[in-house]
Length: 324
Image (cartoon, rainbow, N blue to C red):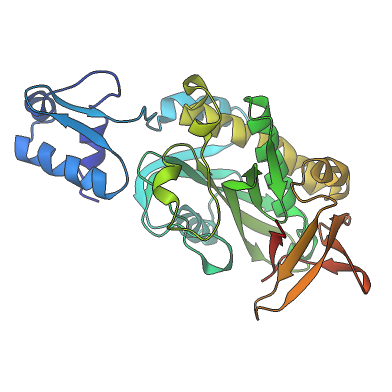
């Protein structure tokens, strides 16, 4: 991404056209730079409408991330928030900072990830301005061996916020996805550091599709959706979404650190998209186990009723799919 791209795009709106000459004058750059930025934005998944004699405007309303909007209420809870324009990966960036002594509750959010990651080595794809990608560093008093239910707690927190915003069908998929009517809306990637027997740290990465799911279909192996398909425009401000998600995660993680996963178990099962439904589990070798998803245990392991009885599965390299 060229250094001037986001500065140029932040000059454009969804409602009114703005001439390339005006944008160039405001930023003290050439009109050619504006023209080139529009083409680069299209390549990165952000549509810009161009009309001769009128100029440019965004095809969809984009709420650019603004620390002055989202950071103050987070700071009140002890969150150290940082917005960066571009990163390879918010998780990789924050993991490196954690190893250098970054404080508890460090938060990194980026407008663009060049190498966003999901579970099992998958890429996290999202168009420019179309997603919310952030990572939160949490330093636990618990050892890493007691964090097996962490991804479920995070997913539950995300789903509750989305439901509060009006997305009534938001549900969790074991162990780390948010689904709406069977399509993926958000995902969680957790990376751990520290002693298995002593205090530990987790970098909690979250990706939410806000706009532009149409451009992702066909590029990923499962159905996807975004918030714009389900919520009115006033609910799509990414600054508000970031603030509400991190505030909820702060409360959930404090409780998890104190009490473990057990207090969250029934609430998680109530929102599980595959609860009491036939599913299949695929391990890293491609081996399939079919059964009925009957819940999770107090550590967050999936309980699968099979022809050989109820079996427990921990996340690891296991992937869950509904039979439908």
